[in-house]
Length: 383
Ligand SMILES: Cc1cc2nc3c(=O)[nH]c(=O)nc-3n(C[C@H](O)[C@H](O)[C@H](O)COP(=O)(O)O)c2cc1C
Image (cartoon, rainbow, N blue to C red; front, side, top):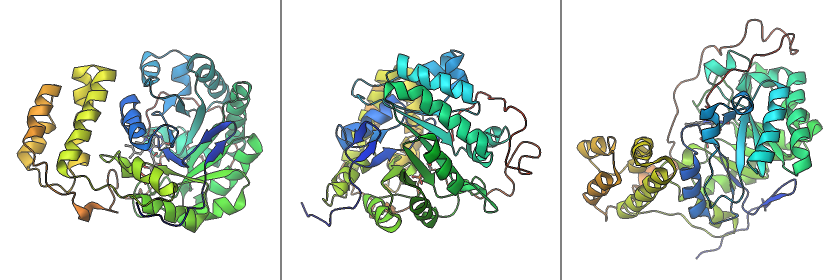
């Protein structure tokens, strides 16, 4: 195996939690459930990376909402449980953090301050919240205080700001540091950018240069080589991988190798991809039951087959798959020798879309940076 220059980022030390490979699976609503996390973990190898659960709401957890509790489901292989919490109320967030530590034995809690979904930002949550500096500090302190007795590190994940004229990431970094947060992850886009254009890695470098806590860089890492390049160009302590692993869980194998100084770029033939698809579906069925598992699997089909020749009829049928037996029959018809479409390498996948003209915010939100009324924490799902 060719050996390349040793990357400058080593293991991540988040408080007492050591993550050998400085790679984090980004929380992705509707994707990073127990089955997907296990699939990625199988690829990376135990200890290589941190695999964060889909976002759950503090209020949902505290009030015992069955759907929220249902999402807090872990695979037996997940010896390090990591969960992302959403919240706008320091009291709920603190209580939720405590529940995660006492009832779910989590080893890491991430807080979401980057969600761009209008339903969320309209209430001042997600990516809109860091605009209110004092409130951000109170939420972070509340989570840190609740998790501290359990030795559980708290991190936050955010965007550059609301839009180009209302940037928040440097303040957020300072507040995170003052609040005892172990690391801040920055997605190099604003809420208004949504998923459009290119992630701004210069902002990530600027944040890294401005704080003493660990900084994790996020945005547009499509290959392991991009992760190393982000570390070199920005000086970050680790990377967060979202869309790049959709339909490509083996990216975590490549990343583990790359951070160990080896050059691995997995280029699976279609036959190997179908084995991965089968494994993914099987894990989903294991965790959710066959009917729900197969339904959940359908959304992954296009990602797995992106760039392969598999025809429209085949894709349509795979998108309707209802049982594992169906899936096996369909996958058997694909040409196992078809090589990986090299043109897909390094290209965007998953959500992209256009920037937003206007970010949905509570009335008068941008007028000042203080909060005058309590924010009502609604039940939301991630993004
Ligand atoms: C389908 C999907 C769901 C997402 N859900 C969440 C979420 O629940 N919490 C969060 O912090 N970010 C969420 N994100 C954002 C990602 O975590 C990540 O910040 C973003 O995709 C940029 O990284 P990437 O370029 O590696 O994809 C989501 C992204 C996608 C594509």
